[in-house]
Amino acid sequence: NNNNNNNNNNNNNGSTEGTPARRDGEVHSLVRLTRRLRCIFSVITWPIVPLGSVVSITLLVVLYTAFVVDVTRECSHPLHAYSLASFLLVAYAPHHTQLRYLLFRYARDRDGPIRPPGVRIYDQLFHTLCLLYVYGGMRLMESCHEDVPDGENSNNNATDVVVAAAAAASS
View: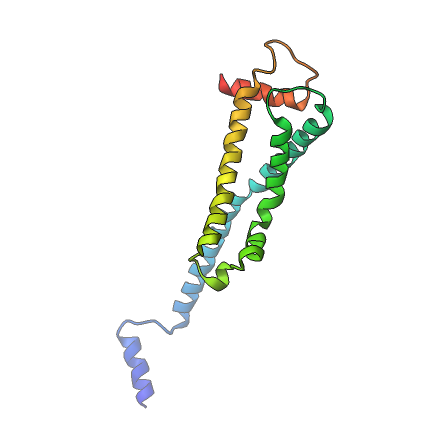
């Protein structure tokens, strides 16, 4: 009898906490929120696939140009070294966490967010190299337009296309 009185009191004071209508409304709100979040996530992440494909193809073209087409071409800028650095960075970056674990035995899930000094220095070194890579690429593109004389289009290979794009961007 006491349980019935408590249920009646809960229903009489305006609380609908346990009613099926309240739970259905919460489930509906949760489903709607989940759909909206999926939509937003899809809109944000969808461009990753075509952009990643374009970047991968561009890397392959630069590597091919640097090591097959322009092997004998004398360039005043280190396209060969930069293309090799591009390949090494693309190959290493996905495995940075695994190599860090092998070197330092640090796992964020297990050890927590506070990293030991050696791990912090290793991560900062990797991030610094990434920033220097980007800066080096910008400097290379800014200075490569000096290698192609105005009005001359030599063989229309990928290096010339990149140099022309850099020259257009800098003017």
